Length: 448
Image (cartoon, rainbow, N blue to C red; front, side):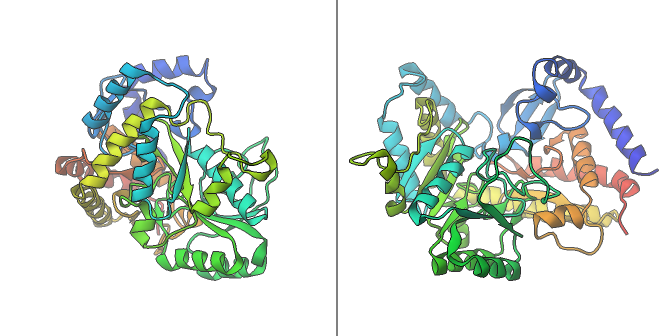
């Protein structure tokens, strides 16, 4: 039995348990491109359609229950529908859904961000991480009076033209039709030699270097500390701004995000996901002298940097949810000890189980995050390119489909993360599902 036979059997098992989702999918494709409103939410043969989530679990339209490792794009760090956030949103909604004015909740959340995030001397809230990253680059260009931006191969910073380049493999090809050409170049993640060569060549032409402390969509690959240190040194040497995209790592790796985790402070940071407590949000924060370029007071329009935020930026419900969740996270260090211990144990034991069945595996990640790769040989996975050229992505997606059929949800091909609501029993379910899947994966593996 080879890959195709194993894959076909799992697809049929999936179809048998998701008949209602198939009905919804057939309706959805008539009114939404691909039946989804975010491209990555589609997976073969069709996505299941969720009905609710509570704690570490979600349920689909057929009533199937899953241990959720996707956790709303990693944003649900306290679990689904955490009591603190639900009560805060309910109370806020009684006052207003949105006022379109400034409020005390905005001030309180901004103060909390500035206390928690090392680089944050000032902060501006936006609706999404995409917007925040776009504005961070605008600030960097305004501050340095330069245009060129350096990003990492495989780095995802949202869907705007500003940074949508070399996100998915093959990295040399455009990410989409309709994109405008940008003053943007890339370097390979975790490659010190190539990064130093490129940055020394570009010298003082660079406005910003933007990097995720953990390459999330690019494979759940943590940065080497020496790599981040090099980026900081080069940015300081040539007068560029170092930008950490912490939409995922912010309040995930530690209360102070990747900056606290690695002990390195950038000039600007982009936040999102967890910051909103489960509601839509983004934020750009950083050094006062840079952030003050967005101050609208006493300046002509050509003397300031526009960070609009949008109609619903800093809306009442998001501010309430975010404040409730961040107060919990920053006051209870036990949360990080727990979720990080789950992540560490899962990464080690998943690899051990798969290897015991003759399947080569390398589970990457840090703290509470993880993603299992299937190397084509005796390789380490240290970059987004490695995920595709040194590992078998089809086997990874098959493994995730197998987990779904056994009651554990990873969005196929993507990382997972533990929340404070996950239990030891949830971890055991993941390990048991992996044990069962491993027996069949060996038959499908195309590894030497």
